[in-house]
Amino acid sequence: MSLKFTNWGATLVSFVLPDKNGKLIDIVLGYDTIKQYKNDTTYFGAIVGRVANRIKGAQFKLNGHTYKLVPNEGKNMLHGGPKGYADVVWEVTKYQNKGHKPHIVFSYHSFDGEEGFPGEILVTVRYTLLADNQVTVVMKAKNIGNKATPVNIANHAYWNLGGHNSGDILSEKIQIFASNYTPVDNDLIPTGKIEAVKGTPFDFLKPEAIGSRTRQLPKGYDINYALDGVHGGKIRKAAVLQDEKSGIEMELSTNAPGLQFYTGNMIKDVKGKAGFVYKAHAALCLETQWYPDYVNQPDFPQSIVEPRKNYKHVMLYKFSSH
Image (cartoon, rainbow, N blue to C red; front, side):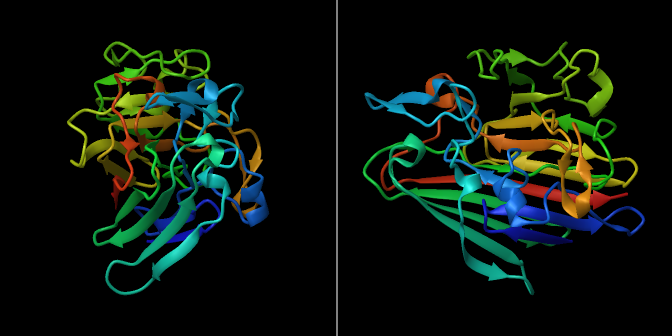
């Protein structure tokens, strides 16, 4: 197993591992050049923040103050704004590519007022290769300023377990360990309700082909799941993804309360690695997170980091092939 990165957006560029026949395949979407990443609007492989996903009206109230953010999706903010963490240069502060637990650590100093967010924070993202084809992604932030701030850092890798150049992911099977989801309005902003997946196209409590409900959801999925189990430090299983042709299975666990399941609906003839053209549903994202727009939804799980306090978001991937 081998991973490649760029410090632009602390981005995962490639993820190569053997399929069931021993053939090495790259299972994430990406580009060949930094210029392509700088012009990217899909967040291929990037770390997104300070607050991932959508914030309604690009504003929120905290401790009696209204903070106006920089919108970048109509009147709303997406993934931290036009100059979010996906669009800045990170510093590589640790790197070990041999021996026990190979790892890389990216660091970023996020200043008070960046894209409108209050508070000064130091952010680190650590990727570590463990034994038995496991990978951890640990996203941390330390508030070194004097203002409380929302923090919701997410990993925006696009997965295709058949290979980045193998076509769409509609035949892959997915299981999502969530009995509930957060319905959205036409701008993909949660309504504030939390509803059961049972009897809806969002029910993946048992493994199902992603494309099995295209008649009900012709555009695909872009929805947040309220993961089962208590969050807040405890890591539990979020999803399992399987590709029958390659035989590769990916199991994802996290300590975050939510999971954004996105099926690459907006990918339109994007020229990617080795010149391969990615189309709609060429890959999917499994973004563990705090719920979208939680800063404006007091009943949702909250991630507000007070001065001198810390944030920690953990993802654990387990890969197998059979």
